[in-house]
Image (cartoon, rainbow, N blue to C red; front, side):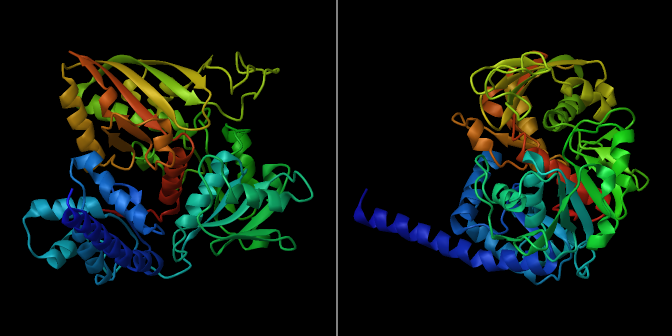
Amino acid sequence: MTDSQFEQCLENWADREATAEAMIPLIGKLYREHNVVTSIYGRGLVNRSVISILKSHRFARQIDDTELSVHDTYPVIQALLALNLGSASIDIARLVDKYRKSGSSDLDGFLRLELADAIGKKADRGQGRDVVLYGFGRIGRLLARILVEKTGGGDGLRLRAIVVRKGADNDLAKRASLLRRDSVHGSFQGTITIDEEASTITANGVQIQVIYAKDPSAVDYTQYGIENAIVVDNTGVWRDEAGLSQHLQCQGASQVVLTAPGKGDIKNIVHGINHAAITPDDKIVSAASCTTNAIVPVLKAINDKYGIVNGHVETVHSYTNDQNLIDNFHKGNRRGRSAALNMVITETGAAKAVAKALPELSGKLSGNAIRVPTPNVSMAILNLNLDKSTDRDEVNDYLRYMALHSDLHKQIDFTNSQEVVSTDFVGSRHAGVVDAEATICNDNRVILYVWYDNEFGYSCQVVRILEDMAGVNPPSFPK
C-alpha cells in the first residue's frame, strides 16, 4: 500500500463519517417532530451514533450483496423532511433500492408518490394510548426500553406505569437499576432518575408510575391519570381468560396482552401472520411464545411456496429464570438440574402452537427443546418434508427475497455469513433470522436454521401487537 492509497482510504472514511454525522439531526427531527422512525433493513437509525449508522449501511450487503452508501441515503433523508410527513416507519434502504429500480431521476417526485399516504398526516400531540406493564422481569424491562425509545412526541404508545410486588425497602432504586443495566443487552441508552416520594421512574423524559399491588384487580389506574390502558401481563401466572380478566376489573384498564401462550379460546397472535384477526371487541389476546414467533413466519413463507407435508421443530433454547442455577428441586422434569452446567431436554408447545396462527399446518409438526447454558439467543431447527422438490440456492434466494421485499420483512431476517454465532443476534428486532449458510436441502427435504433473540426480538413482536390494538401502528414504507 502506498502513502497516497493510505491517505485516500482515510479521507474516504472521514467523508462517510461527516455524512453520517450530518444525518443525525435530520433523523432526530423526523422522529421527534413527525414520529417518523427510520431504519436500514430493520436496523433503527433513531438515537444512533455515527459508527452505528455506518455499520447499518455496511450490514446491507448481508441482504442484497451490496454495501449501502451514505451518499445515497442522505439525500433521501433530507428530502423526507420537506414532505410534512405524519407517523410512519420508513426503511431507507428499501426506499433507495426501489428508487434505483424505478429508473426515475426525480427523487422528490418519487418520494411524494411513494409516501402519499403519510404526507400531511401529522397528528396532534397527546393522542397516544396508555400502556401498563404488569410485571417487570426480563420481558417487562425490555418492553419498557422499547416503549421509551418509541415514545417520540407522545402520539403513539405511552408507557404510564409498571405494577410489581414490593420486594424491599429500596425497591424503587433496584427496579430502576435493573432497567439501567442489563448483563445481556447492555446499558439503557439514555438517562434514568427516580422520585421516591412520587414512586416514579423517569426514563428519557417518560415518567413511569411504579404501583405496588399483590393481585391484578387491586389497582385503580385512574387515580394516576391513566385511562383506557392496555395492560401487558408479563408474569405468566395467569394464562386463561378467567385469570387475565382480573385486569379488566381495574378502573382505567380496557384490554390485556399476555406475553406467553394463552390457553382456551384466547387468540394467540404472531404479528405479521394473524394480527389482522385482532378486533376492537377483543379484550384479551396472547402474543404466543418467543419460539412460535420465530418459526411461524418462516414456516408460512415455506408453506406458501413449496407446501409442507410434515416436519419436526427442534429448539436449542437459552436457559430461563424458570430453571435452577444449581441442582435443586423443580416440579418439571430435568429442569431441576443446573442450567449453567447442562444441556437439558425439555418439552415445548411451539410446534402445536403453530396451528393457532397457521391452521393449515395443524397436526403436521412435532417439536422438542434443548435448554443450553447461554443466557439469551436461541435457535430453531426446522426439518421439513415439502410437496415440491427444490435446492439449497433456490430456498435461500427465496427466503432472502422474503426478508427484503415481503410483508414479513419485519419478522424474517437473513444472514449468509459463515462466521456468525449466537451473540451476534443479541438485540435483533426480527422474530427470526434465517442462517443461509446452514441450510440443507435434498430433493423435497429441507432443514432450516433460524436464530432468534428470545428476549428482545420477541419483545419487538409484542410491541407491534400493542401498536395494532392501540390503533397507533404507523404505516410502513416503501409499500
